[in-house]
Image (cartoon, rainbow, N blue to C red; front, side, top):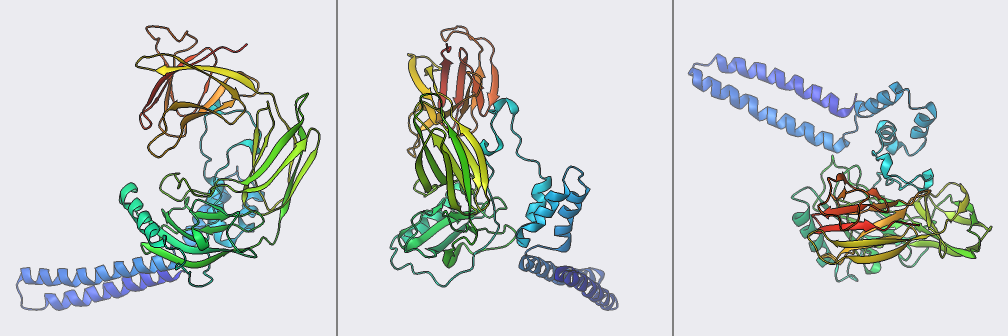
Length: 461
């Protein structure tokens, strides 16, 4: 029995006993009936409020981790025949503090993706979900903010962002000074937090199970700052000095390169993958060091590439070559990864015709679809972001997967009709990313980015 349950039972017994004695004493007085009722109400309300407040405070102190809090996901996992014993054992094999979260992940359904919006790729080429450590670092002492004159301004800026953009929702400004074990500065550290001079950082976090401020550096253990949404934190939480530690265990990734006939060499680049989100949405500061290069090299056709000294952080491996469609792989370091053979395919040219839906001249844009191409559909937004559609060529078909990062976005497919068709036929409308087919006419609509365009894909030979 946990401390909270014991105290709840204790409070219940004491309160009931107090109620009984107090009510008997009031009833035996010579007061009027209305006075007796008012006295009984006062007797009931005061201790009841005190008990509720005490139980709530104790629950927050204990972190809400009661026996039933852990037993519920465990029972659910054991009763689910689809979850193998090996996966259950693995959930207990990691950090004990994460066992409950590991069990919940086992029975939580993965984010639903529509199959018609997927390119047939291997598991390591699919966009990964963020990794969460749900940890809180120990402080190595007080931070020195004197050499960072912009510190106070950043704190105020983050406070204002929470008040303005988070609609009054709870947010915490986390401050600290980052140190890297064995290094003089924070070069090579990736994060959603802007790292100011002297390693100082100031960043707003929305307390949530799927929000966490992370710092990555290849060859080092990940540093994660997670705020438990069940606890209360001050508006500004100072962590002092926090240190990224060198990895005790590292591993490697290996693959063999295959290029099309006539291909000379390819560029291989290894970076950290996306840090987890921290704000209420997936946004980040434009000047945040989101990605840092861990390795970059050239490889010839048929060459075996091995990248070593990788720590347990998420990585992205990108392989590109002139005239070839790039391939991107996602994996976690800390364990040996064999990618086998990585073969690159030739690119193709796709011509798009665009104009405003309301009318105007058609614009022709021809793009080489190499996996990193995008089609600009509007002027830069107020933050300076390029408003474009990311284009990825399908494998084995001429279709092009279009992804617009701002939601919602709608595509009206009028079918295989010429761009000058009038009146337009009844379209098939889809929201979100979708495949675009050569020879088809589409209307793309995004109210957020003020996009309303007709897009026609010229047929390919």
